[in-house]
Image (cartoon, rainbow, N blue to C red):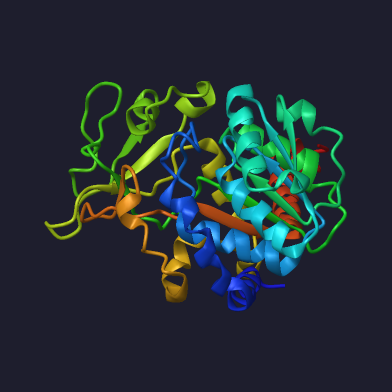
Length: 326
């Protein structure tokens, strides 16, 4: 299997259906529908829908649901398939209620099994035969490791796919409005010199995302800053602002190229999906010229490729090179 070929085939067969999904990006910041608004991009959503239509999975595992925005792309595809269910887990009762109301309003209750609570407890006895694993949760390396060890390593299907959100390739060059020049906790500016600088997270997570850091794990992360390229560009960074994204890139570095695909790299290859149509709707995200754009922060992998890469990492970090059991 080749991950890019799977996406290409799915879009070729079902891409024409995605026009009926436009009510989702048009309402992405409608707090009556989605009280906790997110940034699951239009191209990413279309690929998600097409993959579910094409693969026809019997079961999908999703962590976390939030208000159900990304879940809707999957559930609507299952409804068209006329079978399948999403086992989705959300820790916040308030957003869970909003998601339940949304699913009911679109007649999707039969395709979504929503569990409320900490996914490390509510999903611990989940079956291992999922066709798609969809992770969009804590965005820390420790949580990603837990998910891989609990769900991907024991997975039974050799054709299963694994998705991580809020991750970009290291080659990505993006910026947020009103942030650069970025500074470290001592107020020192980075990225103005010829050599790209690094800035520690700390409160930078709060400044960039308007939320507190999750824990000390995030505070240890550094951000590589890139200065303007030709006197016209603005300062940029690679966009990976979580330990989950850092670890995800470490995993892909150990995979064969056919085992994964960053949607950030693919959007321009699918003009028929109009991937730029909702760029003006992107909140806080721009390119190096300051023009609003969606980042398409989605990584798709073959679950088998993730297992192989994870074994390499755990073997490498085990004392004496011995296999670390997880």
